[in-house]
Image (cartoon, rainbow, N blue to C red):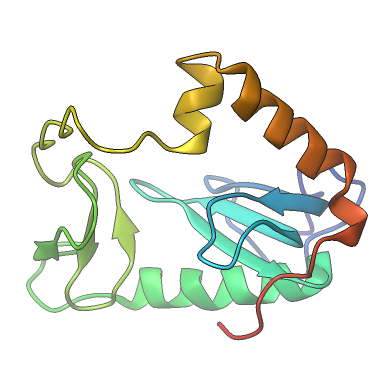
Length: 155
């Protein structure tokens, strides 16, 4: 069954289950990347307990990358449990990665409290602190999105 990708008028290329919410867009802007912000088409899927995201120059390319992740997600097995064991990597919010398939999963660990002296991320400065400089940075970047580089290559 073909479905329309939420927030677009584009039909999905793959047969995503109805239980998996899908959304995407042609004009995303990513903040916080090591090399600075970039523009990208994106496709996101939300199967139980996780969030999968593909990026690319087109929505079709982004969906294809997300579909590959979904195939890995659904093929994970081994212990009789759907996923796990897990490792935290850089996350302190309770999320972790399945050590068998590498998929990110939310709420698999108890959260670790933030270091009160850590540098706040841009998103926190905008939505929590309402920092005018951070808001201006976001608005300027979005307004100039056409001049940003495209999503990095690779899966």
